[in-house]
Amino acid sequence: MACMVARSGRELQRYDNMGRRQVVGCIPYRFKNCSDGFNGDELEVLVITSQKGQAKGMMFPKGGWELDESVEEAASRESLEEAGVLGNVEDELGKWNFLSKRHGTFYEGFMFPLFVTKQLDLWPEKSVRQRIWMTVDEAREVCRHWWMKEALDILVERHSSLQQLQKEELALSCSLS
Image (tube, rainbow, N blue to C red; front, side):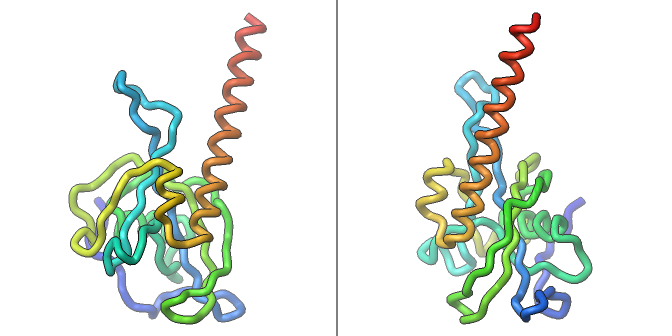
């Protein structure tokens, strides 16, 4: 069972050796359903509003990485708290250093893909956030953080490469039969 209360406070917050707060984010994704009811190969990603609403732009779930959890656990927790989804955290997309406009300080951000296996009707931040499934192109357009857009591009490239490899393996196995 998932915890239904969002963590708050900075007591357990991680900082790097240069004093930058470490944050972890996820790109929740699934494969778009085709008209025949089967999953296709087009990615859909889940974006959320900031706590201040859609006027402040959309983003992917992210938040502080705390001392009592692994980076993957933090990614999973943020996706649950902010977007109400559970799933499988996959290999890291990258690490970015960025300036927080709100706080005027530098942060170190890690991003992971999260293959969504369950979408909850109730989640800790449901009352302060909206979530919207959209295409990759739509997400790239509305996402307000450059570093999250870069992570999205890496995810798309990773899936494109994997699909190409699967097609090549299928062609090879068919030619050997």
